[in-house]
Length: 218
Image 1 (tube, one colour):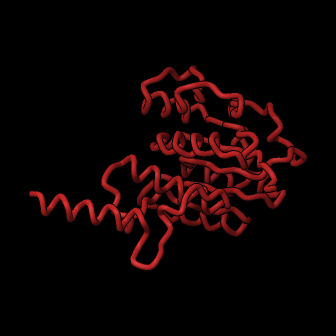
Image 2 (tube, one colour; image 1 turned 45 degrees about the horizontal axis):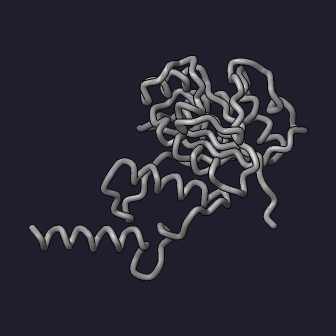
């Protein structure tokens, strides 16, 4: 039997918190995930409220998932409370989505001024997976050097870039496909629907056929 994971998911003040909703929802459904520790920065709360139309001081789990769940614990990223400040906490690792480049810079420089950066610092020192889904473009030289430094320290920079070969037709499909690729990358494959096979992935083949059919009916 596969060992269940306790995973830390962090949301920072970068646009694209709807992606965090997809990732959190998939982790909450996955039987291989025992528990999710959710860290939301103050600016992350502002973005969640803006993108979902909720209140900044509301429960981010309810805002993101539409309901509460006992599988997710929310920690105040503005404090140093919580198990993430210690390397003895048995966490599998951490995913930050979306990850602001300011967060990347503080992690790269070891400037743990809040719980998210401290939790990331713990992952690096304990040699646990740390995946930073940056959401910014273009990058300046400072951004690139910070991302290189995080990579050299053992972290993984995983930009929020959608696939195109699967021929996504909606924003929701892009969110879904990115989530599938991200979780597959960390060993939590959800489906083989987007996996490349001879002739293309099932998603790209089916969508191409649907487009051809629509063109024939026009």
